[in-house]
Length: 190
Image (tube, rainbow, N blue to C red; front, side, top):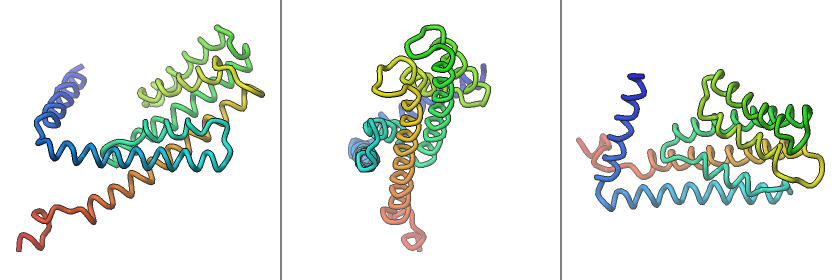
C-alpha cells in the first residue's frame, strides 16, 4: 500500500514539473511527441494496407497507444500491448470454442481469464488490452470465420508495436546523438 502511495506522489510531482516547464520546452516536447506518433502510425498503417490486412487501422491505433515520450516507456507499453493482445486472442479463441460469438457466458469467461492471466503474469496493465482484444474477437460482428479476427488482430498489433518501437528508437538516437544540448557536452565544458 505504501508503494502505491509513493507512486501516486511521484506521478503528481512529475505532473507538476511538466506543468511548470517553460512554454517553449513543453511545445518542443509536444512537437517531438507529435512527430513520433505521426511517423509510427502512418508507417504501420501504410505497411498494413500494403499487406492487405483486413483492418490496418488497428496497427495505427496500436502505434499511437504504444508510442511514449521516452523510448524505455515505449518498450514497456509495447510489452503490455503485445502480451495483453496475445492473451486476449487466446481467451477469445477459447470463448469461440466454448460458446461462439456473442455468447455472454463465453465472453464473461474469456474476460475473467484474461484479467487473471495478466495479473498472474505480473502484467496488470496488459489486462485492459487483453480484455479489449477478447471483446473484439467475441462480440464484434465480422465477415468470415470469427477465429480469423484473433489472428488478424494479433498481426496488426504486432505491426503497430514494431513500428512504434522502431520510430521510438530512431527518435531516441536522434535526440541523444544529433540534438545534444551544447552546454552538456564534454567539449563545451573544456
